Each structure stands twice: as structure tokens, then as C-alpha cells.
Length: 114
Image (cartoon, rainbow, N blue to C red):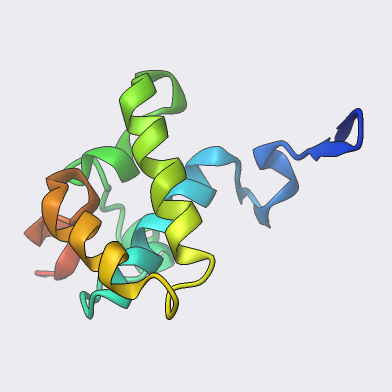
């Protein structure tokens, strides 16, 4: 954690578990939380990793940090702000989720087909 004035900047490495950490991990959790709030269940991350499945079909979850555009980051920031108080912002959260295809998971992320 780095202090800039009175604001603590936290790197993605401060969040995660074992070898799963970083901004991609936070982004994946944010996207899965938003999906769950919209009653969309995904295959759990650890199950996908164990089965060697990937998230690339869900662009925002599967992209590297470097592949994200400024607009992607703004969309994720807006989503994060709304999910901080989902009950208070539920209608706005659902409207954003419904309007932005990149926030919604693909079928490959929704089901595990052996």
C-alpha cells in the first residue's frame, strides 16, 4: 500500500489468495458479483481453473490489464461504485448490466459441459 497525501493506493497484489491475486482477480470478482446480483450464476472460478477452462469468452474477465481500454476501466469503475451499495442502487445497477454486453458472461462461463 502506498500513501499519496491522505489517500491509500492499494495495488491488486494486496487482494487475493495463494497464487490468485492482482487486478484481474479483483475484476473477475466484481464481474461475478454483478452477475450474481442480476441472478446470473457462473461456474466458480476455482472450478474453471481446476478444469483448465478459461474466461476469455467473457472479454472483461479474460482480458489482461494491458488489454483494457480507458472506456473499459471507466465502465468497471462505475460498476464497482454501484455494487458498493447494491440495494440502494439496484435499478441503476440492473440497467447498466442489461445495457452493457461486456458485463454479462458468455454461455461458456455460465455452464460446465464435460
